[in-house]
Amino acid sequence: MGKEIYIIGAGPAGITAGIYALRSKIKTTIIEKISPGGNMLITEIIENYPGFPDGINGIELAERMKKQFLNLGGEIIKGEVVDIDLKKERKTIFLSDGKFIDTDVVIIATGSSRKKLGVKGEDVFVGKGVSYCAVCDGFFFKDKTIAVIGGGDSALKEAIYLTRFVNRCYLVHRREQFRGSKYLQELIENNEKISPIIPFVVEEIMGKEKVEYLLLRNTNTDEKIKLEVDGVFISVGQKPNVEFLKGKLKSNPSGYLIVNEKMETSIKGVFACGDVIKKDLYQIITACGEGAIAAFFAEKYLDSLD
Ligand code: NAP
Image 1 (cartoon, rainbow, N blue to C red):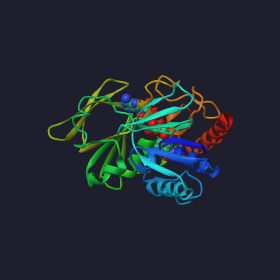
Image 2 (image 1 turned 90 degrees about the vertical axis):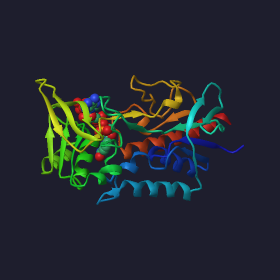
Image 3 (image 1 turned 45 degrees about the horizontal axis):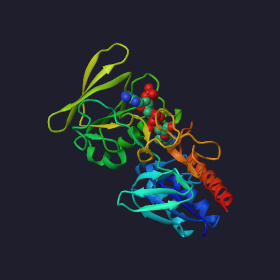
Image 4 (image 1 turned 180 degrees about the vertical axis):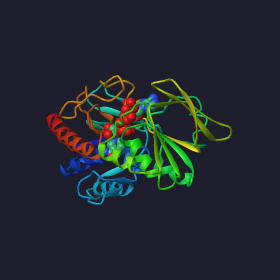
């Protein structure tokens, strides 16, 4: 039987792992739940991926990576992994449609998803003013007033992006210092449409049929204010997409998978890379690098089975 690798997740980590595996003449299949590209698909412009001096649109970069993988003979199958049996040397991947796949090696590259804020009103108003994706929903807030919640790179980027559409963007952050890069902070400072509201947390999202205002609390003084908005974009970090693993691999308390420098997880033959792993820098470029490493050592592992 020829060598074969299954990769779960077609973001930059998974696709790069696939490209490297294919170039080692390993039959490679990526299982993808939605559409190849991962979080690149919800990024308007990527300015820190080398080779694109003017930046590149996230969907376009995703498309280019996918094409490169397919051109090398890779296969992408649409499916949701719901469970995985890692007890034996040959692993079994279970899909939501009842099908299953046996494989010697699996690379987990399932990435991460947006965290919820966890406040009253958040669930009620999803799609009625509460959004987790500026690129997807920004257009619906033309000439409106909105708030972005969070102070990391994502929140800063989204606030800047949303000023294309909105009249006023409040940037609500719980501390006086933003977590996001200095570069983005400077863009925020120079953008007249963005008004930082710090240090405040959201206590409740309120309205009748749709979002009308936020109840905010000052984290220093406990002062409460009502902020009138038409919409709120929640950007308070990510959580790893590991539900299907059901705790079978070693992870940190937040669920991020622990890997070594070979991208090996706690179980032999199972590798992980990209935003699903515990690391210090969550970027497309690091995800790609980890994907390459995962494929390299996955091949070595396959060789060891011969
Ligand atoms: P993040 O860096 O973890 O930032 C999350 C932000 O939300 C922080 O400012 C945090 O506040 C705030 N926050 C968390 N929980 C909160 C709560 N319950 N209420 C209010 N605020 C809360 O997450 P991210 O911005 O999604 O980025 C994830 C990773 O991707 C990061 O490593 C980031 O660098 C990377 N990324 C990079 C780019 C880029 O252009 N290079 C773009 C997007 C993402 P505190 O600061 O007080 O903790």
